[in-house]
Every structure is written in structure tokens, then in C-alpha cells.
Length: 165
Figure 1 (cartoon, rainbow, N blue to C red):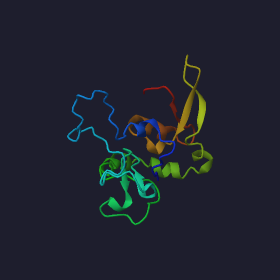
Figure 2: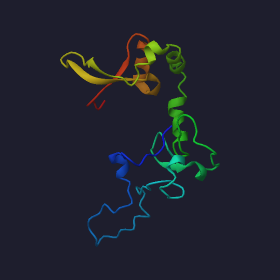
Figure 3: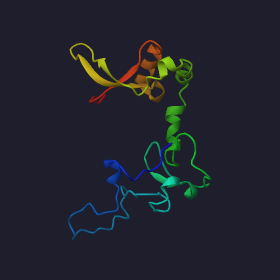
Figure 4: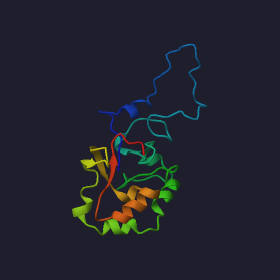
């Protein structure tokens, strides 16, 4: 569950401010028809207030007040929040029939407590040691998911920092 926090706002969040990033005063500043326009604050009412009730979508980082949603929420939900645009995309990740989710859950904390841990991992022949993150295999798709299923309980799945693959 994420809630908006103004102090310590990240650079990606500050890029969505309402200030005009265009230094050219002669250019039309009305971007309301732009498909890339981003609203800082609630995507429904447009207000950037009442942060205790402002939810961030886990997938797209759009913001929504609990009471602006249809139907409105009476409280901040437990767990992750996904907006109406991202919920349909979840089926790509949730509808895996390979039993990986169940198998990972049955491993216990001795294996799963390391998810998210930053480590030095062997990068293969000629690469030496490289910083990596132990990745939760339930968040994978495609070949990485098949690889995780094959080595589950024996090896951790890692993501190497600086790797584009």
C-alpha cells in the first residue's frame, strides 16, 4: 500500500508538477489536449490535498483520493492498490497456471526472507562479481518465470544492476 508523501518527493514525482517546464513564453501553454499530460494529485478531482486519503497505483503511480473512486472507499485499503486502468493488466501476471506462486509460498521464510536483498553475485564466465538484487520469482513472466520454477528452492533469481536484459 502506498500513500503520497510530499516531503522527500522523488525526482519522477516532481516531474509531474503543475509548473510550466517550457521556458519559451511565446509557445502555447495549454496542454489540456495532450495525451501525455499528467496531473499532480488525484486523477479524478485534480486536487493535490488530503494526502492521508491519496492512494498511489502500484503499477502506474497515478494518484486517487479514496472518496473520489467509483465506488468510493471508506478507508485506505490494506495491501496493494491498482487503479481502474491497471487492474485489467494484472491478469497478465496473476493468471499463470504454472503453480509457481503456490510453490514459492510453501518454501517458508528461510528462502523468501531474502527477496529484495542486495548482494554480490557471480555474473558468469568473464564477468566476475556484480551487484544484484534477489528477485521474488512470483513477479516474473516468460522465460525468467520458467527459469525460476526450474531452480526454485535451489538458487535465487537475481537481477543484475546495470543490466538491460
